[in-house]
Amino acid sequence: MNSARTTRLITLLSLYMAQSIPMSFFSTVVPVIMRQQHYSLESIGMMQLIKLPWIIKFLWAPLVDRTGSSSPGYRRWIIYSEIFYAFSVAAVAFFSLEQQFGVIILLMVLAITASATQDIATDAWAILNLKKQERSLGNSMQSMGSFLGALVGSGGMLVVYHYLGWRWLLLALALVVLLAVLPLVLFPQQAVLRKRPRSSSVSMTDIGSFFSQKGIWPQLLMLALFHSSLVGIMTMVKPFMIDLNYSVRDIGIISGIFGTGAGALAAMGAGLMMRRMSRGRSAFFFAGLNFVPVLFFLALHPFASSLWVIQTGIVLLWATYAMGMVLVFTIAMDQVRVCREGTDFTLQIVVVHLASLLLAVLSGKIAGAFSYTALFAFSLLLAMCTIFVVRLRFSKPQNENLAEMPPA
Image (cartoon, rainbow, N blue to C red; front, side, top):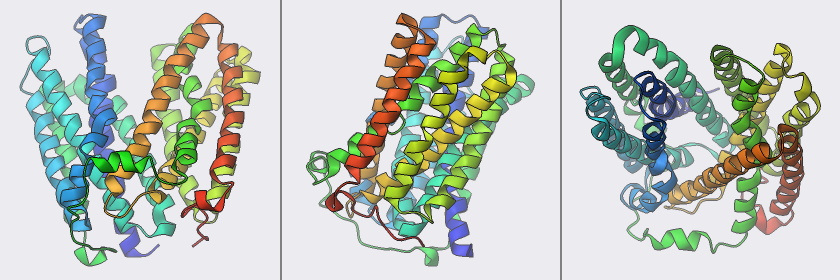
């Protein structure tokens, strides 16, 4: 791997980890701390508001594209967003959860808004600075960064909190965010692949025009459903383990370490595989892999009280999900318009997030009203539907766009 490519990939890994660590901390560790301090479940539920900027970030994506639609422009957006992100996180350290809960929620929302803005610019920067055949590796970094960030942000930061307390934990978190932008600051400008002037024509109307493109609806349908067979199981697997009398510690180790670690490794493997396969073949291959964890849970869930069974199932689940995410990100990067990279990519990923949210809610209703067996059977049906939508997406040449690029 040449040095310029290595630098680009390390920069992306660092930036995506910077997004994931605080988000994971705020959404998983802070609720634990709040419960220890006897906050109500309603107050803990309010913590989910911090995720709102990631759902609505498409609203200001055109602004990012219009003012920074070149590699140096996106670079400035990333750096300024990261600095604001770090200072917002640091500010939380000087308030008490018990006495200034509302202020902390506001600061967290501001921090996550900055993180979401950084994500828009980072995705666009990646599209401009990665060669087409490098996009799968770049998205491996995105997926790996998310998994590794979740590992550090949930498990690692809880340990730091235990030893250093609230204030020093938040200051350490802010320092991590600042350090993560260093590879981009040091990124050699001569390594930039494409430069172009800013585009003043990007506006909110580009959000609507995105959906009027030829072949875009098969693309969005595939992105929305690609992980549908896995999302329900991922949502319910922890309650399933609780019902099997696994301890919180066991769940943390099995899911947080084994599952997340398997996801990070699988993401790297997926990126390397996609360099040797066309987009269409990759999509069919990874869609076929979705059947593996689904069939595993459907067939062996009566034996899930056995440690090796549940460990194997979770490793398969997270590894398959991570590999599919690399494909989803890469296919989404292929379907963007010039000077609108941030807007178009963000819109596609928001569709993925909203579909996952709806499927997560539906999975709870199915498992609650019927049984886990019914949920696993429903997941198998969704895996079959995924094969159908992949075939629909890649059935016509006009739908393929850049998807059948030859291997590097």
